[in-house]
Image 1 (tube, rainbow, N blue to C red):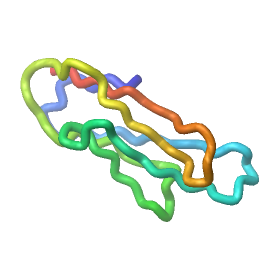
Image 2 (cartoon, rainbow, N blue to C red):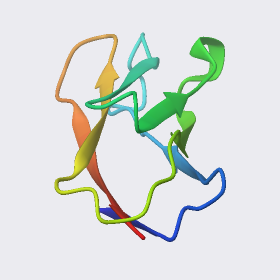
Image 3 (cartoon, rainbow, N blue to C red):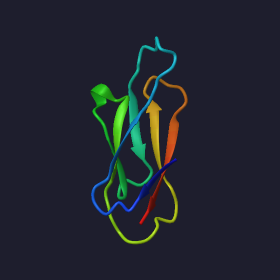
Amino acid sequence: TLKILSPWKKHEQEVSATIWPANATDKSVTWTSSNEEWVRVDYDPANSLTAKIVVNRTKAGVFPFPITVTAKPNGGGDSAECDVWLFW
């Protein structure tokens, strides 16, 4: 869980993914956000194990539910998720 407090200006948080086993042939990941209007994920597909979670919008109040950021391995296997909560 990532809690972002008072994101009045552009807020970025670096995240990373690890692919197991270490000898996997495809070590790339596709990142997605469940709500791109509020939170997007920026990453370079050529180096997709690291990414930045970026808050797109700033408003007063509490976003009423988490925004889920997902890292899905392109070679198959289980995805990983991180819930992002926005608090002002």
